[in-house]
Image (cartoon, rainbow, N blue to C red; front, side):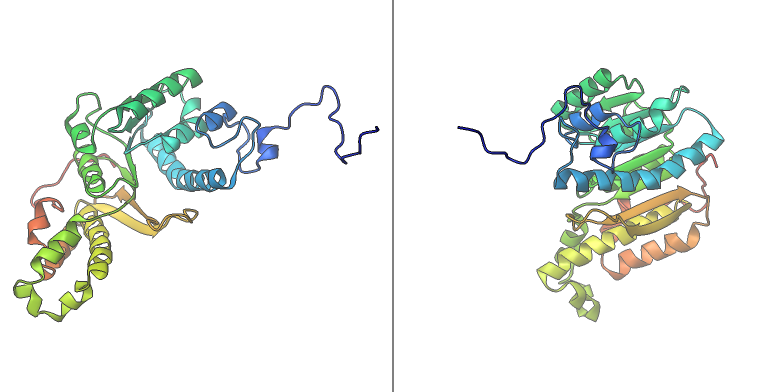
Length: 305
């Protein structure tokens, strides 16, 4: 019996597989296909599924914010140092290195900080296979990394993407102590401020109509999250940073869509310091003062402009 024609043309002998950026237009020409396959963003035949397309869009959007900061650092000095806190599988670190760092021969380095040792080991092995010598991965918490001798005394740029709860604050503390010129933060779930709001709303502050804002548990959580990021921004401004807050467009699957970019400009510190203290007192959050600390106004940290 003669086989029915399925309508599919036979593949000519010797036909080559199209370039990855032809199969997936999102891929930038020259980007490492092996890396994207190792990160499971691309399939083995160079294709993207819908979830991978969203993930790649997220990272590219972040890279668009970070690349100008890297170029600004280059104008000041060679050998850029970037620390990525809560690196996970290091999607951002690897793609940043592939797109920007791998062409540099000046000692520039990306450090991935991650508590899960198995992910640190896998990232270390992947960097070695890809020939990315300027990448290091350390099995540390954000707080531990602040005093670790395995990191330089000074860091140019600090990223923390979806670092849960207080890890974002630890990353800010790390960046302040390392005198970072730039911070790129995507905060995640924050519960500490909401817990303090809930604990204190029955005290003298309970006489204020303001407590209606967080009287219901759902509102306590949402308001606590909002206030946390407001306090973070004021803290950064109180250390001389210019702060921009925007949406991280492209993270459609995440409710945590806030992007905070801080650039050290040696700006006046008194007004944001006063405002920070006023917010803490008004909302009964004085005990959070050690977390959202400011400089003593008589002291000025030494930063490189």
